[in-house]
Structures are given as C-alpha cells and as structure tokens.
Length: 271
Figure 1: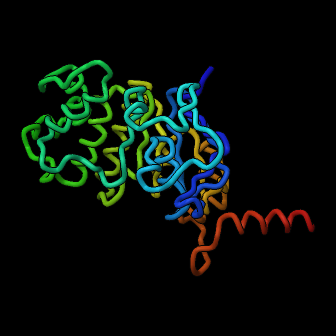
Figure 2 (figure 1 turned 30 degrees about the vertical axis):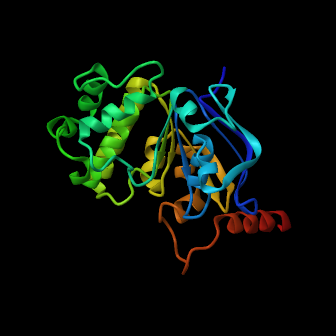
Figure 3 (figure 1 turned 135 degrees about the vertical axis):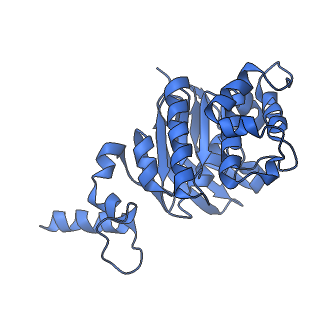
C-alpha cells in the first residue's frame, strides 16, 4: 500500500553549493501525523519546501533522491500541480492574505480544487472550517490582517481544509503564540486528523507538544536524521528528553545531539 508521503535519501542544495538536507529518508503513513523536529538550521523547512516544489523559487533544488506522494514520484512536480493533487503547505508565519477578509481567504483556497471555481461563503467546505474554528465564523467579514496570531493560524489551517487535501505540511504552527492558544490549535489539529484521516507532516520546535500529537517522529541535526521512532519511545529517550524536552539537562550551552550519540556509541564499543 502506498504511503501518503515517502522521501528516499533526498539531498537539498541552494546555489548548487550549500547543502541543507543530507540523505534524508522518511515516511508518512496514510492518515498519520509525523513530526519533524530539530534546532534552527537543521533542514526542516527546506524539507517541506522540497516536498511542496518551492525550492526553485529560492535557487534551491533536490540534488539527489526522490519524493513520492501517494505512491507517485513528484520530485520535479510544479507547486500548483501538487496542490491540485491534494497537497497543502501551511507555511511558517501563517502567510494569510492580510488585506482580505477571512471569507475571501477561504474563497481563494478553493482554487486548489481541480475543475471548480471559487464559491460564495456558506458552502459545505466553509461550514467545516467554521465548525472546527467557531471564532472564524464570528469574524468571517473581518480583515485577516487585524486578526490575532492565533486566529491567523486557525485561518491558515482552515484554508488547507477548504482545499480538501490528502496531505498537509504544517510548518511551525506554534510560532509566536501563547501556550494556551498553542494547546487549542494542536487539539483541533488532532481532531481534524482523527475525523478526516488527512495525513500530516508537522515541523515544530516545540518538541513537547509535537511528541504528544504525532505517532512517529524524526529528529534532524545539520540536515541528517539523528534519531527517529514512535513518539512514545522518543518521549522516554534520555537524549531526546535532555536536548528537546529540557529534562535532566545539566550542561552549559547546547551540545550536538549527534555528537553525543557518537560519543556514547564509541564508549560502549570500547567497553
């Protein structure tokens, strides 16, 4: 059975020289939430841009490996074709149309539906969004640029729902939001996944909450996978708890997770 997403040993470069991702392989099963964790500069956002076909816009490319969505290779697919095939990328920083109303933002998202034109508000698709995010229903005529950060994030996810995706890429949905709002948004994301069975690849620096909502996780450092596995196992991993959950850390400055892994392997081998 085909996976919702499969990356096979991909390498991402910018300007033909700067290597951001180095031999990354990962799988998102159908209907699952998979988390991609790691510090700034680890290659997480570059991975999402590779999947969404956005690298050429930033003088980047998938230099090696392949990307498969729903069993079909999409490594060189154009972004708009990927969207119409069922991929939706909720980008870092919300990226809503700030000078348009909430409802106009949702109308814009209907262009992702192959063979359909934008429809007026009140469609079944919009009702689904308003059901998950009642605050958007109350403010549907308001300009998106005047919404709070949390409301804009809800709108960004709502636009994805309108596009009826099979796979959603979520890039840092907690960025800049208060903890209570983060909890609310992730509760809704979990509910959307459970009720619609849409697959999700979640990039998130808030490892604690990501490991609660995802079923499987990959931790990137310097463009490579440092560790991966079921989230219940990673939550109990001593290194993950120290480096990403802030439990048991007793060292000044942040060491490399990969370096610590290599040191411990070497020590075990010498012993």
